[in-house]
Amino acid sequence: MNFHKDWEENEIMLSENEVTHRQQNDEYMFYQSVSNGDVDAVQDNIDHHRFLDSSGTGTLSRDPLQNLKYHFVVSVALITRICTEKGMEMERAFRLSDFYIQKLDDINSIPELSNLHSQMVMDYTVRMKNLRHNANLSKTTNECLNYIYANVNDRITIDDLADHLNTSTSHISRLFKEELGISPSDYIRNVKLDKAKNLLRFSDYSIIEISNYLTFSSQSHFSKLFFEDTGMTPKKYRETYYGTTWK
Image (cartoon, rainbow, N blue to C red; front, side, top):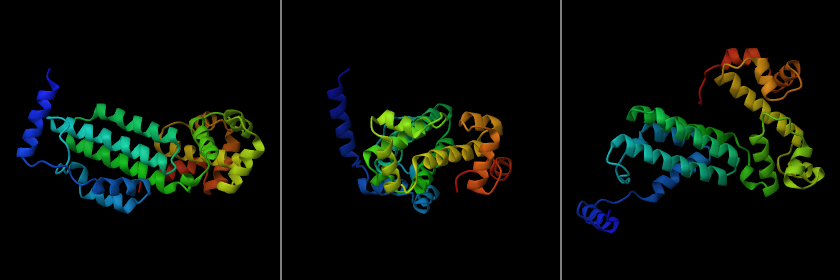
């Protein structure tokens, strides 16, 4: 196969048809809206079906659905990296990317793909909105947050963090207090409770299964901490929010 010949013929065809790509500023502003947690701007993009607007976008496949799937992969890859730069834990960002790319295997129509893209960009946007100021954190603190997220179903202690980063527990405690205004143990507890909320909303695992998965010492201890955080029991929280999506 002569790629050079194919390339030159492709160049001639695009030039004759005056095909040009849209300005990068448009895409850059959209990705900035996602990484800044600007829900309104991203929702406006969704409402105007910008993902389906092919003007100024490259043709990556002659098949319309496959072409959009390729653009979806490009989009989620760029969003993943810019959100990581803006403070999302690297492991969380890449797990989200893998999750949504795998979902492409089940997509058989353009409307389905458009809905998946809307869900993906809003998922990242809401998560970024809920972040505090991780982009300004030290490397050590960010690595701690990444470790906590990746091991949320384990019993994590400040000693584990210190061992993982080959530093002292006092150093980690000081950084958390200075940069997050919270102790490492309280931060770990909050991450586990946030995970519990998602499991109660979007899974059918029982409360005891969720408690055990997140390594709380007992179901009663889990329920006590959950009530202190939300003002609801886990059972009431599930009854109220089960199946609700991002808003």
